[in-house]
Image 1 (cartoon, one colour):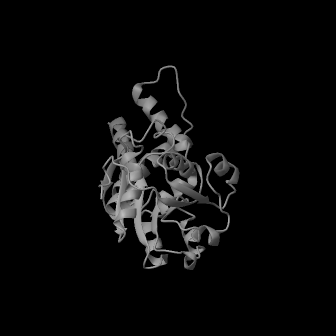
Image 2 (cartoon, rainbow, N blue to C red; image 1 turned 90 degrees about the vertical axis):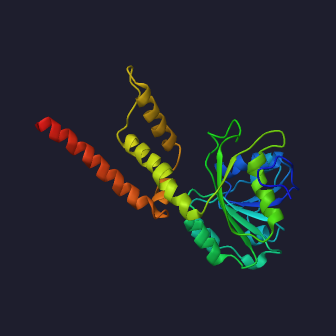
Image 3 (spheres, rainbow, N blue to C red; image 1 turned 135 degrees about the vertical axis):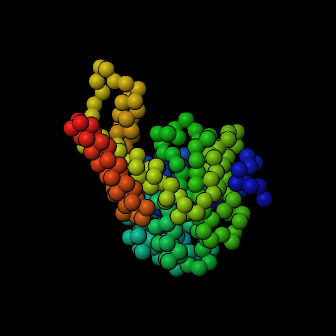
Length: 269
């Protein structure tokens, strides 16, 4: 069996996607090019978009789970995950299935899915550290974090990881980074959540370009604009469902107060 980082193609997979928003659509384009069989379901009606992609859109969740998926990929929002999982009729599954998620937090979906999934179903938690904008020119060098939480069918798991490791048969794919969900959330609180926090603060300040911008300010404006492309629900989810984010917000507040007091002290001197 080829390793996840091998460029040799593995067999095509039958993949069902739950939550067919922009990120799922972005991933689907590459999966189709790789030869995988895709079907989608979502609370919103994406039947026309799926028709343009040449894949079935299944509104009924019972029918979706009965459609012989080897992999079920959860691309829901962080805040809606629990409701979606609770509404899934797992008894409709025809075979042991690999469940995967792409949420920006990892301990939370791992715990929700471990509690809800049938014991014979496998689970891998992933976080593609890119999106439609940063990955529009290819995934080469971009990071895919994953943890094999419960894997017995190594062939299906390797095939799923190969989607990211190879991207296309003729191109190199992601930098594959295996780590625990806990370690991911610790690091993400210090990077992704902190970036979103700073971007939201800058958005609240309504900063705009000026004729005398420094390179440093231009980068700050890019952070603000990048965060503006994401919903506040994502930011909320990063805070509510990453237990390490609370401490980072406190650290940010303490650091800001410390800088402010240094300025005031110097001014008073």
